[in-house]
Image 1 (spheres, rainbow, N blue to C red):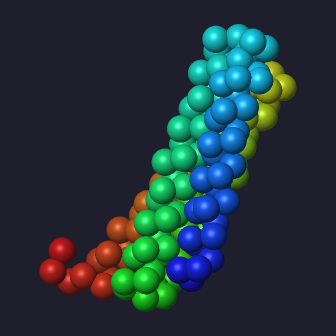
Image 2: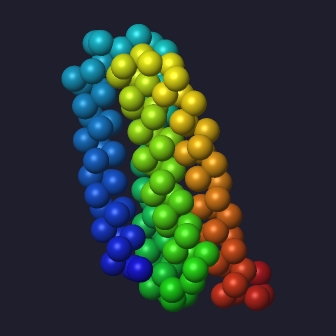
Length: 127
């Protein structure tokens, strides 16, 4: 589990920086201010939750293979794909219906954070 989520975090980190730079340089002149803000929100949540996936990997190395921790990593992964991915697509295409996917990704993020809490409670009765 540690290797899996470290790899995922590395891939998402690499692409998060590349996507952010692409938006800031190659796409900036094509975006309206609203679309630029949407794109930047996608990058922000992408990179924050990449760090959350890395935290899952580190915690897995310390706490072991806990189901709620593993689920947290997968929900953070799904959240990046759905939340940030839909915002990138919305900003680039302007197709507003893509915004309907974004809350599903947000829900994935919340479930991921809940899984992290559950993992901490499962292994740390003193908390």
